[in-house]
Length: 159
Figure 1: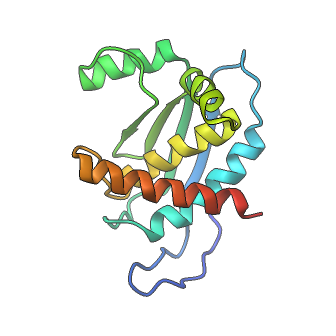
Figure 2: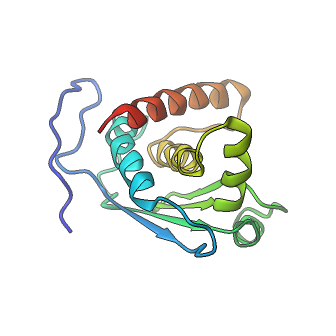
Figure 3: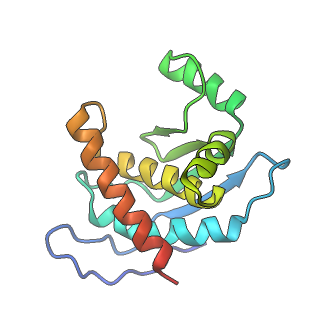
């Protein structure tokens, strides 16, 4: 499937001719998700993430998002990052984002919003990592958190 063309309105950090294709894979069939809603939010967020990019990624033609269980993401966390336990999101630089549906369900209840909104926040976080954002220091994490919240708010309000 061909990516949509994008109007280039940002002269400082121009958007690419076409956006990467965003593929969502739901591996947690037990949990009912509004995948179309999640897809719409994430597709709205993608050009906003690219507009805030700190790194140009012309090599990125597809972004794969896998929605998995806490158990599955904990294995990936251990195997690739040598850290124990589940996490909310893991991003690989070649364009793969793994998000935990179990964690999203718990956090969504605390935030008083939908699981899809929480998952979208995780995907936005992952996309920002793909485009050069880091969160290793408190300062970086704070800036990234503020950026992803702004993007989420805009993506939710777009139709």
